[in-house]
Image (cartoon, rainbow, N blue to C red; front, top):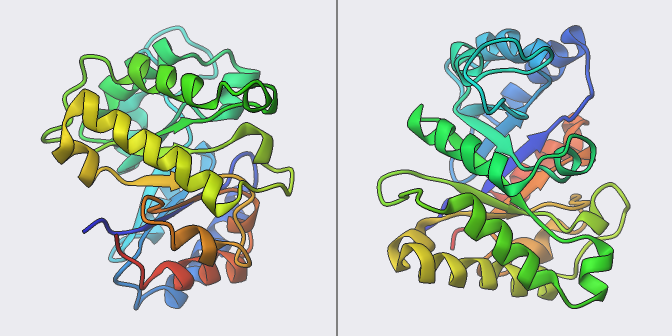
Length: 254
């Protein structure tokens, strides 16, 4: 059985004070959640403060990215050891905004995923196609390439990676893939994992959907057999909508 996940990616939102206020407000609202894993990814400046607030809770902490380098003259970057020092258990890798604005590619994602796994931090690896790629019927080819190039020579028998399918055309646009469209891609991702990494790895890997996920569309998405939760953007920034997403996912297992 795969436990569902609701992961909130705050992106470049919330000051330090706002971050602490938000986390303090949601902790009592999700104390009794047992059947849904909760992950939040604040901006870097808030990681340490949020980590301290999350002590004795079931909420996990994620960083929004890491450098391919462990240390050195890389102004503006954040290292694997830095996020480890804040007790991050997860890190988002390959988000479409990093690919679009910061020249992230599959080769860099490969290095980052290996680095994370070597340090016992679970990558949330993002894959997805642009609108032009979907209209050209290249969706599956693009995603296969993203999976193969990133996961090449990475063993997952004793490690976990979380895959997030985020159609780029649906992120922050209000558009959302239909549950059937999302399920088709999730099935393809799981089948690809089975061929490349084996059935055991494929069956245990949790695959999230990301792309304008909201409380009013999560029900139909999470019913799909290969959708194991969501990587949430805008809807995770307000306590009421984030908690509603968690509550709606709390009783679903695949």
